Image 1 (cartoon, rainbow, N blue to C red):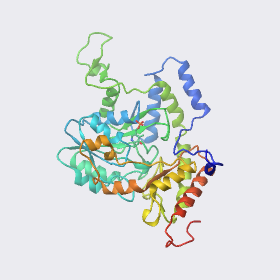
Image 2: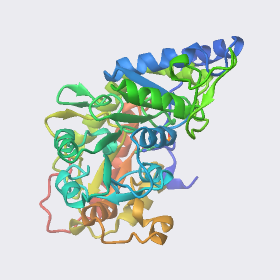
Image 3: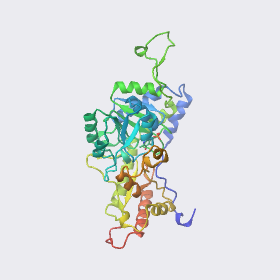
Image 4: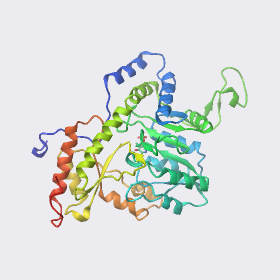
Length: 399
Ligand SMILES: *Cc1c(COP(=O)(O)O)cnc(C)c1O
């Protein structure tokens, strides 16, 4: 460790919070009869559905599996187009490719960083089958406008809620507005099962398709079988996967879900503290919060006003890292990746997303942080950014 970083431990951008009762819940399953496809799965699913206000939840092995299952259940096929945001983790677009369909990127709104409904309209063609909006950082996207577009053009809406467990839009939790909503329980997300994910929905039909997709497309339900050979009989009716979550994971999920509100309170308290610190601080723009929603604050992203600074984002990023702050960047626009470039996507597709990408830095935010960690980050962001401000800026705003 260099001398500059002495005095403060490394603060990662996100991490889990596992307590003794979480460990006990897992140990209990390990001592019991079911390691997988047991009662903890349904317990977790009904608790999750209740937490987000949906009728059904299907637990799967990851957030990516949840997106894949939702695309399958929505009937997305070879040749279809699906509109999504480039400002997301690659999985949100990859799931479209899994179906042999084509992701079409609509640009983001420069203020909210969420997919811009007016650009969705521009990207609709006769091949468009669905929209996958992302609630980037936990800030709900323009759900009402997107649902209006979906109704007008008869499109499915799959919300990628990986950042948005506990987020609220017009007084309702994210999870039961679009046709399906997907969640991830990766350790940096709101609650964790190690790896894990889920799809929530209000549709019985989608729910049943999701359940079968999770397990090879197999059913044992008498009403669904086309034949009957005896009590052992089951049928595979379409090509599914093994995307099951284990009971070990579900037990952890049940225990973690009980803490969701406490975790959310902490995230919101810390985000508030960052917001107050950076409000009016030249060079740094906090994330705009629309009045009709409450963010779940998965990420705390600042946007640098590079025109006011004599340093690049990279320089500032590296200096913060050298001060033991686990900064990150969310996200590299999905279509910048070589795999997407090879398919013909390229720079210039979504100018707002590209401009945002060049200026974004994610600061550490997770419930297990201490207030002192937040203050350490604030102090250092102000010191590093302040150092590079062009001198024409009015003094006295950097409290
Ligand atoms: C984490 C994440 C995913 C993928 O979830 P996994 O559980 O890691 O597969 C998908 N979309 C977004 C926006 C994410 O942040």
